[in-house]
Each structure stands twice: as structure tokens, then as C-alpha cells.
Picture 1 (tube, helix red, strand yellow):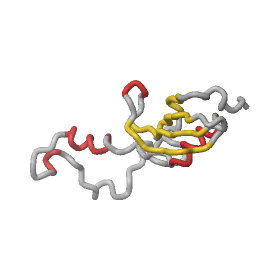
Picture 2 (picture 1 turned 135 degrees about the vertical axis):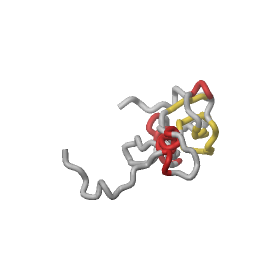
Picture 3 (picture 1 turned 180 degrees about the vertical axis):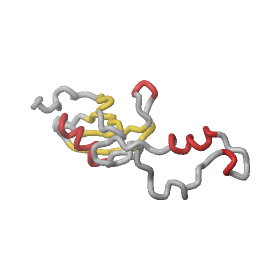
Length: 123
């Protein structure tokens, strides 16, 4: 096994290296608190999607246009902490309320009259 060229010059960290008492857990915990980068776009998983992506997800499934949008806290049964709540006007004049997970873009809930009439055909 090859060693690094300056391995001897690098100090080893231990609890005695600090002026106060530090446990090993305190040295590891900050690393665990870093955000995870799990999305394909390289964006941190903790960042919400842009509103335009949430609107595009609804537009893929329902005919109509956006009336209003807001970012709201999620509900416990939805399994998400942040959702976009979109009000969607269908061609028939009905208003749908669509809830989209702000972190993943998954449709959480769609509710309102004319929901089935406004659905786009499956591709």
C-alpha cells in the first residue's frame, strides 16, 4: 500500500488536539448534517424545484392554464414537507387545485370539478 508523500507531516486529530474535551461523535456529526445531492440535475435535494417545473408537470396531465400558485408546507400524510399548490383553470371553466411535491415534482393531489374531463390522453 502506497502512502501519501506528506503523510507524516499531516497532524492526526484526536480529542487531545483540542483545548477542550471533544468527543468522537462531535467530530463526525457535522459531516452527517451536510445536504445530500441526489437529484439528476446536480441540485441539492433540499432545494425546491422552480415553479415552472411544477407547472409543466400539471400541464402534462391536464388541459388548461395556471391561475395562481403558492408554496406551502406539506401535510404529514403526503410524506413531503413542502408543496406547490396550483389553481388550474380548465377549458370548461372549472378550477382544479393541484398539489405538487416541491422537492421531487411528484403529483400529490388533484381535486376539483371537471378533473376527469380536463385530463390529457395518456401518451
